[in-house]
Amino acid sequence: MAALFFVLTGLLMLVGYAIGLYFGDPLAFMLLGLIFAGGVNLGSYYWSDQLVVRMTGARLIQESDNPSLYGIVRKVANEANIPMPKVGIVNNPQPNAFATGRGPSKAVVVATSGILSTLTPGELEAVIGHEIGHVVHKDILLSSVAATMAGVISYIGNIALWSMMFGGVGGNNRNGGNPLLLMAAIVLVPIGALFVQLGISRSVEYNADEYGAKLTHNPAGLASALVKISARAKTQGFARNSNNAPSPATASLWIVNPFRGSSLMELFSTHPSTQHRVERLRKIGEEIGVYVP
Image (spheres, rainbow, N blue to C red):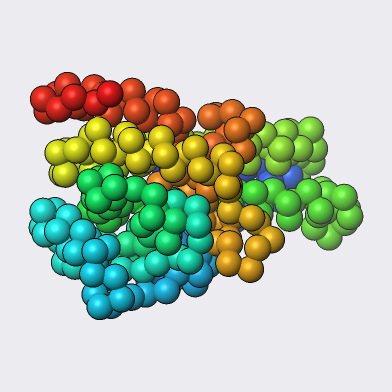
């Protein structure tokens, strides 16, 4: 994980340097990119829970609204030795769940109405264990930083591209930088950053699977839940233009990508394939002495 963030930071500095070399001040462009990324990350750190809840259309509930879900979240949170998170429900028939917040004291665990009617109590508990794993490891913060840095790289590249098209800064190339090198940086570095971001997203999903399976001692329940959720996601994905559909920008937060089509390659996905996740859960089951079909 640390290596992936190192690569992402390096790509950000590389694209800033290439653009600055062309326009006359490489160090200034590198610094500008890092400052911009830091400012956005700071905002994401403090307000991520509120922003995500709003983007997904989740409704925060009290225990009296859904004692069963609330009780499962409390049980798993107690087992993880963290404060009781806020609980929310998204009114959508597709089974899915996510967690957000910058840490255990500011966490929100959200489930769709579809998951409450699709999974058994044991499967739902295993899913909540996965989401609590994200909370414990502060994965939401990590993913937000990765997404922001990748976005900054793409944003800076777009600015540079439009500047080149309209004659560059001040209408001339002050340092005589190679425009082909700049074009390569503008096109290739953002693609590389996207792959690194997706790699980070898939890595935290694997880690949360392992944590949740061991915390609830139920890797079989999590594997079964993932199969059910994935099957419904392929046939009943969130409609992007529906009034009650969450924003596609939240795709990486859900336990299964709710917008994924069956034709997408895993390389371009925010999540590992369900097959690979189940295979890893079988190995975890062997480690802790629990059979996973």
